[in-house]
Amino acid sequence: MSVTYEWERKSMRLVGYDYSKPGFYFVTVLTKDRECLFGEIEEGEMRLGEMGKIAEGECLKTSEIRKNIKVDCFVVMPNHVHGIIEIMDVDGDPGKDNVLESRPGKGTVLESLPGKGVLQYALTSSRVGFRSPSNNLGAVIRGYKSSVTKQINDLRNTPCNPVWHRNYHDHIIRSLEELENIREYIKNNPRRWKDDPENV
Image (cartoon, rainbow, N blue to C red; front, side):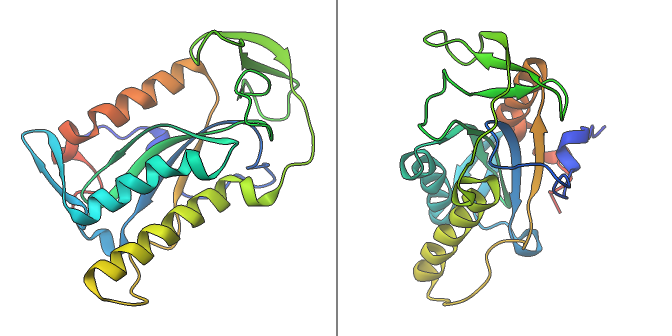
């Protein structure tokens, strides 16, 4: 039986939320018409084709291109990519302003302790400051999709062909438990392909 989590299906941006705010975001980007461009699942493992290797390579490059962005984990599936994107403070310091919000609009957040790694947290108060719109979640996804599209169209000699569904699914991760659950979901996604709602 297929199980669908609430955070799998969210497709609209949260109105009024600042998507440049430090924190963890679960994102899914789908190919146009859910076409299986990136490879296939064999015995519960993803086997990347040439286009899948492009999609994977750009995931890995994302953290290099933007100082305040870290791809926490990701998986390239036959027709979509799941990933957890961490937005850090403008200096790219994960120990200073790496926020998991307990509730929207509240001043209490969970913050990583310097030098202790992503899974150890302490309570602190939130910080508000100007952040460049070029480093918000939407800009990261647009840049990723654009780069993958160009490389795939160069590969198959199909200039201006759409590769992606025009939107993306996102979910703001609000607790350590949820972060761990989503990491586990991403890790196990290839094994669940048979029951995946995107498997058409």
